[in-house]
Image (cartoon, rainbow, N blue to C red; front, side, top):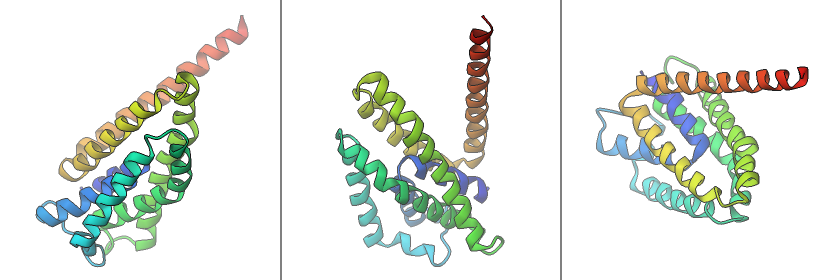
Length: 189
């Protein structure tokens, strides 16, 4: 289960760097039976770290809602989100004793980086182009909600997160397949 939580939390970090870290910190602080952080990750339950994560979450929340600033924020987050995903994966996996820490950090980095890359390079530019930028704020709010819900579910019900990931990936692959089929049909006409 820990590995499923780790994948869910690192994917969530690809949408918002600080929400999954804050969820990890708060759940580990108030519900240690749900999530126990081993050293050195137990430092995340410090009130200083929790306060810092709250401030950083607020900064990212508002920066992502302001036109032009959101593009600068996405550039900065291109580095921050994969690192946050690596930390979320390693801190929550509780596999540091079973899997080499570098592998655990790399997995989180790749998952969060992949989610962020799709969001920043494909989804957000398409939304900006099709809505003239008007859709960016609602989509950003939706990303924050998804990141929060996914982070909580990844800790509380990790199997559900795995099933959701499989279903969403399957739908995305199906959508790509149908799109390619339609292109092929248009080219034959």
